[in-house]
Image (cartoon, rainbow, N blue to C red):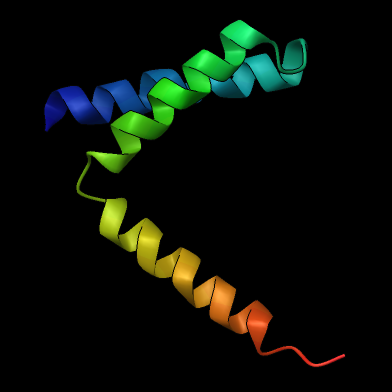
Length: 64
């Protein structure tokens, strides 16, 4: 668990810095993919999934 959290923090920080400084490049996309794999394997993954589903249902209920 400790390794997952530190991996999430590390890759999240690197991805944020890449987006702020240079724009997205192939190497940056790889770091973002690794960040996603670490987040998916962490204990907060179910909360992120539930939040995404809630947001999707909220946006799906908007009538124009």
